[in-house]
Image (cartoon, rainbow, N blue to C red):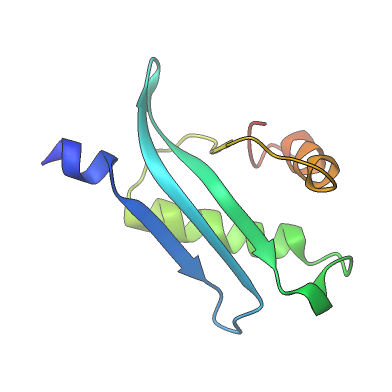
Amino acid sequence: MWKNILKSTYSWISKDRISDGEAELVDGEYGIYWQINQFGLEEGYRDRGLGEKYLREFIDYLESEFETNDIPLVHMPVGEAITFWERMEGKGLVIV
């Protein structure tokens, strides 16, 4: 059973369909945690300061599916997204 849970990918779309994300559970050296593989906002909504709001919703969704009580890890942020993820790490929402 655990192997099936840990290999599952969880997809999320915000209620207003502006943001979406994808994550998976990982059984790491220090326990089970969420790994965010994809997260974004619709193009017309970027740079409006909404990223943190939607990221919190995404993390709440993940924790409601399987509670880890841990900070999610962001898998390989790239390009312009790196500064966003660094800000979110500074706020204690994720680990980059």
